[in-house]
Length: 219
Image (cartoon, rainbow, N blue to C red; front, side, top):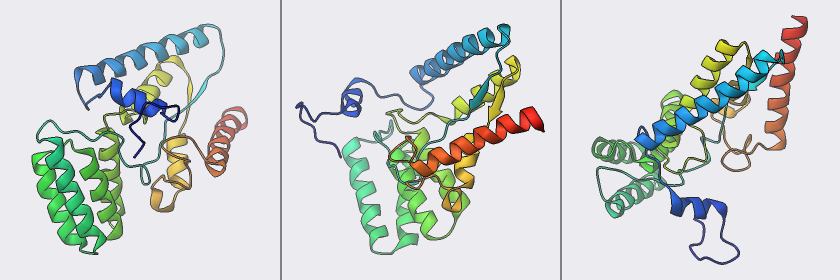
């Protein structure tokens, strides 16, 4: 974890950590969706009125190799949650995958919004080869991460809906990143950290946009 001091090494992420937690589905979360929808709608409408073709990509991020930045729960105290997740992590580290999953399932019954538990559950399921279930767990971890450096899945729904409304072309870059990732789980192969692509990731994105352009012009 990042250091807690206020010196020159302090990061933007730490500053934002101290400013805001945005719980999944909260009023502030919904306000963020509406602001994104409004801003993007204004832009797409202006481009459409000006006759400017628009190609817009969906949003991808690091699911597999980025643990949640802020993992809170409305159901249990943070200290209790951290202890329970740490216990499950130790169990998993010892190779007792089924036991770790049992611990995590019990914890998530009490605290279904606990991002760190979802993330660790994804790790355990991936270890068992249950890739689709692992992906669902990693997605839940991202969605419940209260420091929202990674866009929620609802943003992509908004992008697709507004693109259809304003005649823009959607480039499914999120899917392209998944298709190029082992087991379809976007991780450090595609992302440097939480959402900035590696060179390989940029190649995948560039190829997706090229195919979108080529398909629209020549297909």
